[in-house]
Picture 1 (cartoon, rainbow, N blue to C red):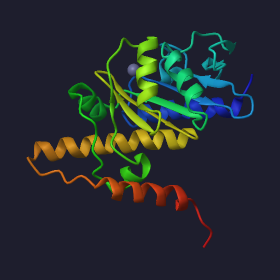
Picture 2 (cartoon, rainbow, N blue to C red; picture 1 turned 135 degrees about the horizontal axis):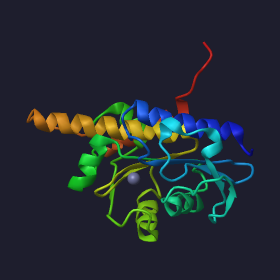
Picture 3 (cartoon, rainbow, N blue to C red; picture 1 turned 90 degrees about the vertical axis):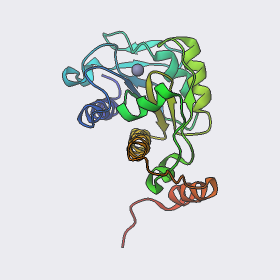
Length: 218
Ligand SMILES: [Zn+2]
């Protein structure tokens, strides 16, 4: 079996999505690219995460050839592979139906940056990619375009998607978007004002995070 460690990480991310309530049963899809071979470990279509094993995951190439796996890959294979083709820096893609992000995906409003932690992880507003049929090439193109210079986007009437240099970063961006969406939603329900961070503050937080945020020996 190829790439056993990367398979473990993809499966762990899927299970974390369930634990965090960001996707249910088999909603969403996850992939990670192996930097050495360029092979992509990707979730199969319609297999509940709770029953999924590392053997169930598929290995594909960026031009969508199935290298290893007994199941059909996710129907969003075009979306994942197009992102990897257009973003050489991206090694992981996480698509969820995160509930608060989905509220904004339905209303068509971008997420403003209101929390310092989310500003560090996201670096700016989270846009809404326009609606296209799930699994279509049009959806892949529109969503990859929204992600061309940022780590997260909403998918109109659908959910959220995030990318990163590894699964941990991509997943952290999804959590940051969901935290932001929940915060804005609750503020609105309180009829409270929403004080978004100015773009220059967000940019400063993001660059400080990228430069300095890592475990450091005392
Ligand atoms: Zn979906």
